[in-house]
Length: 274
Ligand SMILES: [Zn+2]
Image (tube, rainbow, N blue to C red; front, side, top):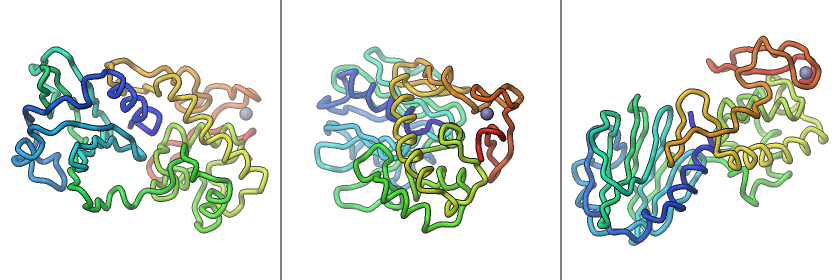
């Protein structure tokens, strides 16, 4: 699943392409109405028509397209979702589930082989529980050492589960959770309350560092992720433990182990991570 760095990459590319903002919307085509969670899919075309997007931002793993009237179209790519803006029309791809048409002929395409992606529409001032439940953004100034300390000590979770809990820190998923814990030399089954002051400092430093480094390499592609320019990310080349069970730890040469926590694989070095 795309995590924070992959979603951030898509947002930056959509902004960079120069066709998404201030370009009047002339139509919407929907192939899978059931993907629209909180708004009737048959009414969305009329609602968007004539409006323009003023900005594109990210909250956790959600892409937020803000309209000129302050309403927001919110997209969650989930497993196989891909968002791309094309200058020339394409609509014969069987995996395109939604198309937004713009006045200059370009199109925003939402491709999704497994159709697990979700779309939401938020009227100005309206609350969207799925966003309100999210925790602190790890790349924001609100992610302070004190905030992280309070989050750790006010719950009673295994460290891997803590990092993946979107209501605590938003945007980290399975890949980066394993990588963060390896770089911090913390065992994934450690309890949040057992984290020492020194480990807290490392976590506070490493979490934004690894996410920013991955953004620099346009994210990680394991099986499926393609960014808004339909390219794979490159950060998979720099992963230290994720997916590497049976191989040697890059630090101590001990065999990297795989365990299952909450039905998800965790990769770690039993020697380096205490
Ligand atoms: Zn090791």
